[in-house]
Amino acid sequence: MSENDHDILLQLNIDYINSVQHSDINRFDEILAEDFRCSNSDGSIVDRAAFLNQTKNPAKFSELNVEDVEIRIIGACGIIHAKTVYKDEEGNEKTGRYTDVWIKQEDNNWLAVCAHVMRN
Image (cartoon, rainbow, N blue to C red; front, side, top):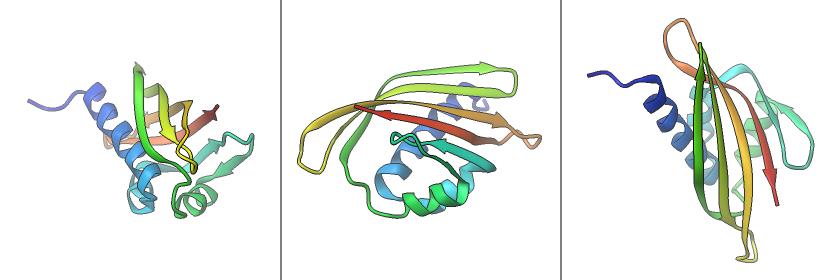
């Protein structure tokens, strides 16, 4: 039995979050589209190269967990909405939200084309 698209996107979401927490730019290199863009929580928009550059630095937060994951699939487009819970550098619990958009490629692999991050 092969994985369905929902299960694949669920695992890619886990990979994405783990890559953020552990600065895993090698995994990001595999799952980000060439024209990937990210809207950061500070309001900046970065391209793939800038995102990889900012992600290679150790995260300034810890214990990143995801809640309320909603995956929607519309044709070849997967949209993931979720809440994050994490601890800042001082150990205070914080929350955020994100939306990631994934596009299914002709080879049936999914690549992230954009992300939007909001932190409280």
